[in-house]
Image 1: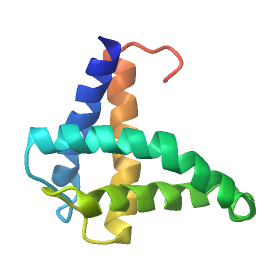
Image 2: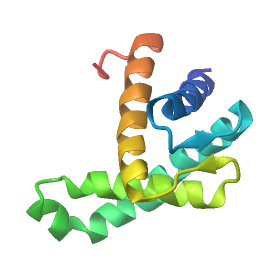
Image 3: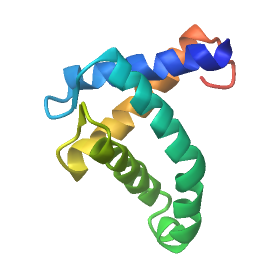
Length: 117
């Protein structure tokens, strides 16, 4: 039940992005649900590999390169999901940051995870 609720929270967080950034577009709730699943899978499978491969530059930038990785993965998912449009790297970077903050806050409030806040 918790996984389903977290999935819905992430999809709703994605639906909030077009209100914050005019360049990001999501067509429907169904599309947001698909994007939420794909972002979860990409972050679980590809992200750790990229973080490991880019560890030297991540250390040199004091961890800020991880934001670049998050933005690139956000843009990557948008490139093959129809109905989810992110026009470039900068909207993807800021969209990924906003998505992370919104979903984290909503999860902490709704799920009541004491470790989240």
